[in-house]
Image (tube, rainbow, N blue to C red; front, side, top):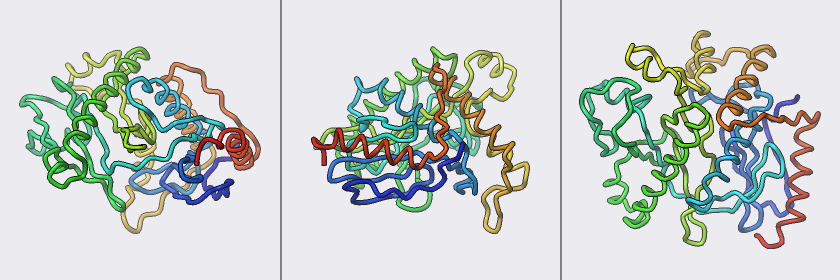
Length: 319
């Protein structure tokens, strides 16, 4: 299986292309976006030299599955997945906020808490909590979408003061974010998982709030295994996570943390196979479905043909 590391498609009626860390976004006409989810993998904000076979299919499959599972809560950008690595959807005007929501005191929230802070983005964090404890109610800790560099935490009061969104739109963003997290939590519980924290991105399409990008994937979300959670908390043991953390650990064991002057270590075929297997496990555990990978000998040609066919058959009403 050849990995899709880089893409440079020229689709019919293509007007623009944007290449992200993992997703390559192609604008078609006025109203359509084609997201090609590559097999690139990034850690410490660095894209690794080799792609992970099937990783893009896993992420695209998980995101597609959950976009469908929440479409009764909020309109989503998705129209179709004509290829395992591709989602086609509506072009939206992005809202420059990441709606991060946290059910547990983990990761960035825990680091702030440990440093003595009892508030994150204006959301209170109660006294007497320890790492991985559940918040009484999930907290929303938004971040500004930076054009370059890292996203920054921002409190709702500052969002409104800066005029990033109106008070009415903020109230809707908050309501929808909580509803999506509740649904994600329920779906995770059916799979024996805890949805710890995640982020949602939104846009406006003809003035209507619309969910864009990916949702509830292992790249945008953190999951714990539910079985044994209480016992591990009581014993002060680390929680069992379902995430791409193992890649970061492998890199750190080889003295790579994305610092200036550091070169990513070589990932041999054996390690790539291991990472592929872990991503397939993530897919099957999160969705409860068997992973059916497409190992076409020329995935670029497969993607191109699938997208062109879809555009020919469906794009008349768009763009």
